[in-house]
Length: 401
Image 1 (tube, helix red, strand yellow):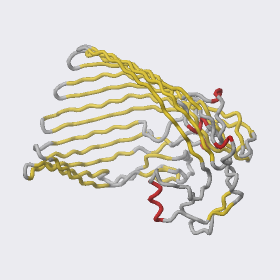
Image 2: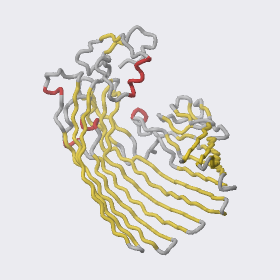
Image 3: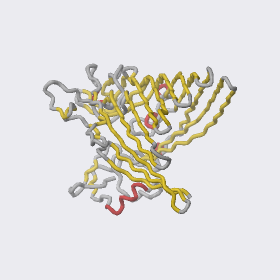
Image 4: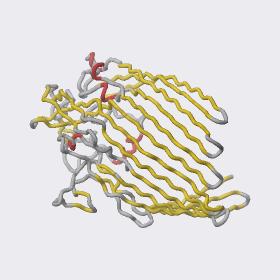
């Protein structure tokens, strides 16, 4: 719907998926007093003018889950499994008239499930090792079942469950003043679906990519050192490597009329996964001068931050992901407890990013800088990046009775 005409008299709708639009001009915009209805999931939108798309997605779930565990003083083992059925149905109010048999699609049921097993062995009272492994067959997302904005169910030959295979192993140490955990992991996520607009020889179309794979692997460490009854030091480190597993191709890209205009390939093999830092570390020092008062100072470091993969950025084998600058943040917190009339009251002050560090934690695209590229803090000016918060404060009050 049109929330704001931005000063124009109307919005002309040439929606190719609306059998009734024919370039209609929409002059009604949602007024400020109606904006609250955007968050009302039970509110009616029947009278709102519709643009771009107008359909309902009906998804149902049924499932079973079971788990068994055997525990002794020395070791423990477990196994768990589940099976789930998801039903998908689509109702389209734009492309099909209410009396058209295609107005409501057939119901498509897809089975999935999980199996996971693990074991832990206590070497002695302080040391233990463990290993876990699992397999997850996940029904594809709604857009994979109904491609190209219509109510035709994708053929079974092109409809694959997403497959997740994970394995991890670790070591733990516990003593009166020191706790440590070390974990290594590898997760493969295959047969994901991705759909996006592309241009082939100047013609626009929709590419449906199947078989997208991500591989996440790395090492994690966390620990707590009780230096004295008054001082604790916590720390964590993650060293990850998250990559796409292979290139993917749609051999039959279609235009707005459903005609094939060629093939499109996403050159993703070995490219980095964006939206999250692959390398992070944190130190937190907590001091307890008394039973009532404590304060802490922490340092957070993030590195190996890559741009989000967009289809337009990876149409050429030479395309690659951009990397954002690393950053460090200092935070401070203090807590004080007091009693009034026998009731406990707690005060908590947090100052986040106390040095007001300017940093950027995510990019929506990938712009590779050259020696002549205009940049700011090492980031190309055409990159669509997200800045982090500057210095912020919050004060909390807890009352226990």
